[in-house]
Amino acid sequence: MNRRIFLSVFIATIFTCVSVQIINAQNETKKKKDVAEKDVPMKYEPSPSHRFGKLNPNAPPETAQFSFMIGEFDCDDKIRQRDGKWVESKTVWNSTYFVNGGGIQDRYWSNQVVASGTRIFDKNKGKWIVNYFQTFPSYFAGVWEGKKEGEKMIMRQKRGENESRLTFHKITKDGFDWIGELVTKDGKANPFWIISCERRR
Picture 1 (cartoon, rainbow, N blue to C red):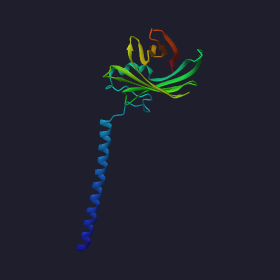
Picture 2: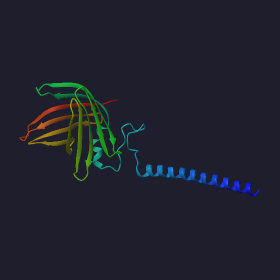
Picture 3: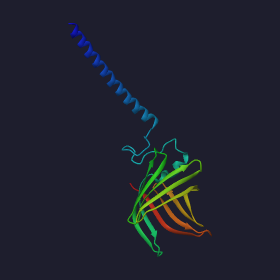
């Protein structure tokens, strides 16, 4: 009889210990999930409910200056070739918020160029930092810096005594225009890339 009581108590104790461990593990998992959702929020990233992400309210206020790019656009693209002739093509340009709504990442596709860029406002410099990557027709990468000047967003990169200047202009809720120019030291601007974009409906 004592043996039966002992076995019953032993089994009950084991069952209780295992149950407590399972409950503790479940609670720990829930705590970790709650902490992750609270301390490392990702609600500003692109998601099924927000395809292009959302602007993080804690990002530098200047981040909103590039909000006009968020979404998908159909564009007319003109690139000047080495012989001076312009080649035109249709393109798609889309942009989303990334790094949890603290910056903008864009992607660009045409039969002339496949590229992507990131745009983050550097509070210490008081400037936008734009990283550009191109994989087609050949690899190219570069960094431009700039800021909003009047109604334009202008990014610049030094190239020896010259300057590569990239300008967003004619900005509206329905689209924008963009021009890439090589500016000589005497101030002469030579366009090499022109884009006009309309927001896709």
